[in-house]
Image (tube, rainbow, N blue to C red; front, side, top):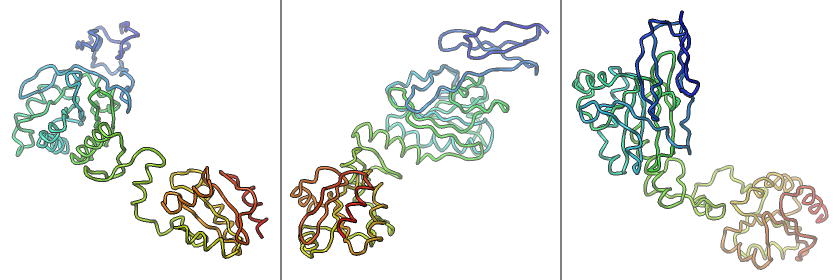
Length: 359
């Protein structure tokens, strides 16, 4: 068997090619003719590594595609300035695939209204794509298509996007959303038997465009018109304050929730030992130390542990009057007066000792 040298810079390498190997030319993005395909089982193909990653530039490609009923060249870069939904499917003339392609195609106008281009891709030949579009839908065909269908016959595109099943020579159901700059914002990959949701794809594009325009982030199941989140610890509470309380919320029976100055004054004037826990919903250390505070409250029922949420306007006034400067901050009261040193932050030993001194 005659060997053939391969360029180390080529993204596809074929080793130990026999002298009677058949060669098929493929031109890469930089113009290099590097793809050789061989029928002989003794040779093997090394595909390029996966380069499609969220937050990274989508791998560019130029390939044959069926566009408006004709076979032509299509370059991904052509759609710069638009959002792009690039979705791979396993094979022409199959079962789940036409349901997906038709579902996306029939709602192409909705994507167009969002400045979004749909592009379908499989490893079939462009002639196969064209024949499939000429077959009526009631016979398993696609019929007239308003979206391009790319031929990845060399399988290089599928490899770069991480959806190629090499042993079968087909692509998984990968869906890639890229923004106007060609940056990947979302990736999902389904196994072959499971179709994708057009509605969810539209929702994701609307959410991505909302974030791009407004700078706020979108919570789970967000739909246009729903509340969004300002992505700062303090401002995010505006959203979280509307969330339905969990029955096992941190407002445990062991803590006394103070909602206004009158309640706070009455508690202090009672003369009982009081630990006032000034906290904020956006404070990570407040949440971390809360279980320890609850344990102390259960261990020392003779001490009242008061929870003061500074996001409540009336409690914020108490915080300002006492000059509370950090969260969590613990203040200690006995016989109607403040006693001991304040404790700020996650300091379990100091807090435990301070509680003992109140007894």
